[in-house]
Length: 392
Image 1 (cartoon, rainbow, N blue to C red):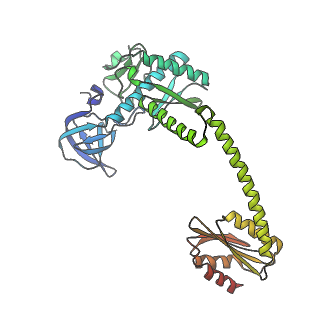
Image 2: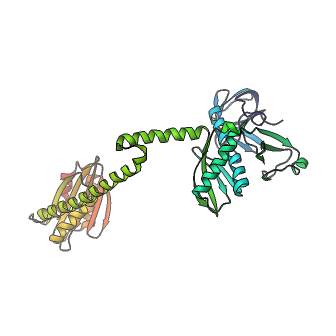
Image 3: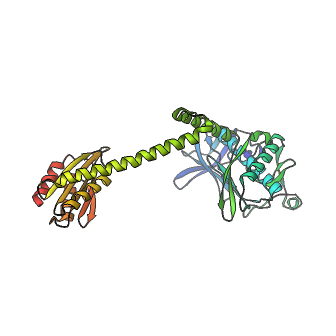
């Protein structure tokens, strides 16, 4: 007997029996007398739902049986199955869309499909085409849309291995080790293919198929698409983003890209100006700090990053190489510190740096005349400074 998901892909519930249970990698599973749950295979993910109210986490073919991996163990006996229909119908739209897309790509453009992937957001097929132009992609999409509108009947049937050789099947690939009858899925007047997946009743139920783009792969082309409800959801998401961008940029849809480019150019100019002002500030502060008396210069700066501290230290030591510099800053609830010494300073920076890190509870490191690090806070800064001064 063929499983219920093959006999009627629109069945959402089933009363059956649990024949046996087991465990796979710590997850309980059951084998059922019959099932509405499609197991992962042929590029199509498995179905989900519940068995006696327990979540079905995965369905896999193992050792000639269908294992339903569950959220909790169940005993042998009667079983009530409930299918996640929204997931199933989505998969049927994407998979049937793939059959139609594959047929049209081969018949109109002589592009053979070599692989299919049904992903959680988008799907793709791999085609033998070296490259696909935008014009060709538009032609392919329109040809598929025409076949969707044609409302072709879709059916499945099983044939014996002997009869299979007489059928005009597009692809003759069968799973390794397959024996017995062979399942054929037909889109009337368009395609006949071997497939064990779940499919729609007619091409009109695909609703729409939108091609999204391509990428080169293994000498061919990967073509991305969405079908049915996914296409409508994607359009809705794009409309919501466009509405938000219209409000932010104060521009209609056709001017959003140019308006955003203007904003990006303005931001880039501001960033350049900010960097120049920061460089001027570091130069000014370096001169003021270098003029202080003593062998050690210390300062705490608010809302500055390590790059600024490094720039400031270089400026100070460039003006007076005999000095050592201890700089700290705090931003985003985290403290940073920098210890650096000029060529004329006798300070052992690696040893002093490790001592500072220990007092501040910081992580850091360095080499030669510089040591820097990060601390959860600078609450112990005064203690750290006293320790440094004692070492000097």
